[in-house]
Structures are given as C-alpha cells and as structure tokens.
Image 1 (cartoon, rainbow, N blue to C red):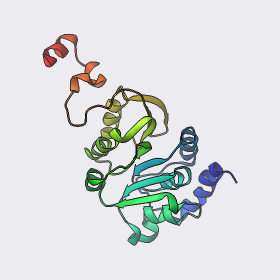
Image 2 (image 1 turned 135 degrees about the vertical axis):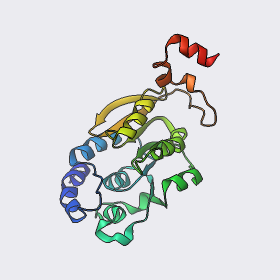
Image 3 (image 1 turned 120 degrees about the horizontal axis):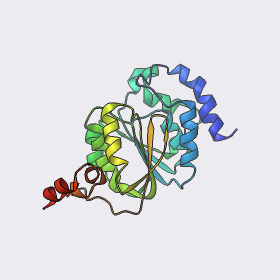
Length: 217
C-alpha cells in the first residue's frame, strides 16, 4: 500500500477514534494528500512543526528527523492530539523529536543544529503567537525549504499571512485549503535583530512614494 493511501484513507477511520482530539479542526484527507505530494518534491532531512496531529504522522514518515513543539496532553487519553499521532500504527517514532511545553517558551530556548527543510506553523493561533513562532523559525529555513502556515482563514492569521507572503524571502505556492504555502528563495535572511521595515514589500506597496521617502529619511 502506498504511503498516500495510508495517510488519506486509513487515517479517516482512525480519526473517528479520536474525534474530539482536534476540536479546532484538522487536515482533511484531500489536504494531507496535497501536503504529501508537496513534501515529496524536496529532500527532508530536518523538519519541524508547532502543534501535533495528522501532519506529525506524515512528517514522521517523510522526514529523517522531525521536531514537534507541542503540549504533552497524553493525560487526556482519546482527547489527546499527541496520543492521536503516536498511536497511529504507521507513525515512525524513530524520526520524531518532541519538545514539550508552550511554544512561546520552548522555541526561544531551542538550538537548531541544522537548517530546516520544511516547517509547519500550527500551534497556538491567538495573536501574536504564530508571529512569534515564525520569528524563531524563519532564520533556520534553507533555500528551497517549505513554510506552511495553517488556518490562514482566521482574521489574525490572515493578516500575518498577507505580510509574510510578500516578503522577498518567499515565493508563494498554491494554497492547500486553509493552509498557506511558501518556498524559501535565495534572498538574504531578513535581519532578526534589526528593524528594516522600509525594506519589506508589504510596507513598500502600501505607502505612497512621498510617505515612504519621508519615513526613511
């Protein structure tokens, strides 16, 4: 049986067992198929995500080393997203590295030992937490890496998405349902310790020439 079939078909019946584990919604079978096809286009040595669920299973099977930043919620049994991922028969636990705790605390403390080939931002959705996750992830993305941002239909995430997708560091790829997809370009990494707002396309495209020159004088 091909991996895609295992993810899309087998997981549908498996998900029924954990129906309450993803109250905020989860990837549909069609979305998992599309994400898998996308991920198979590049070599995945080091990947990461915030949150846990169907995507964790997929990454465990496609990536040589996948790091998840998630809450350890195994005490909730069948309501647990972590149990959902770890109990799936095809999950490759050997490739998974779990960093437990709120990503607002764990990501700033984490030392990435190698560039990342793909990242999924799907942890806490309240403002400004997705932006905080992005801040610690984007300098780690190698050229050609994929950045997926889930639930961009939510208003706060939509604004975040609008800003990031215009950055020179990224090429926008076709959206997968409510998941935005970007590919890292060869553009220099935006200085994470500077300012440089005047260099960002989102700002440049929304200021009149007079206002832009006045602001940067």
